[in-house]
Image 1 (cartoon, rainbow, N blue to C red):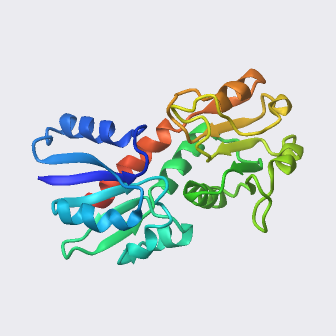
Image 2: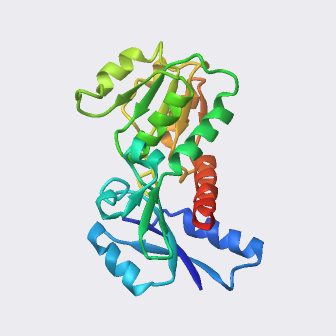
Length: 245
């Protein structure tokens, strides 16, 4: 049995198990391939997961372990090293753990489809976690200037008050926070939504619910919106390519 799975905490909202289970069924390989959830709060429990499941060939990694898993890896792909976050692990034949980042491929393709030819704009990235690093690299490669927004201003981020002042000139807003994720569906980033227009593009990385409060509030003022489902599909397919490459 070839085993794959998702590492994170909590995993009640997981897309990956449903996606890969259906993928295995469609490919006719469900008898030999299995995708499970490994819900661990402490990243040091990874060794126990691998010991108890010696058939694991690959893992996806989600919140809160995209950063703290790095010291446990034997090797990191150069692109993931540059991003500074890992969301895919390949277990090599010798048992070594190799880290990759497929979030970059997912968000870049999703943004390209969302924006079309409209690339001469500035972006605000809401949140400063593991996904933010992949989004930032994608925007750099797309030559879209951006600022990262966090609750507290730091040397590398601005706060929401400053972000709201920039809304007239920053037309792409990407929510990398978990705000609005099921079951806390009423939460949303602290933006002045009334300053959004039909020229704004609001991309939420949250996919459950399919239309978040962030998206609804932005749409009410004419902004174009998109959720994180396509990004997840693209990054999942990149994971599969990594595990089988």
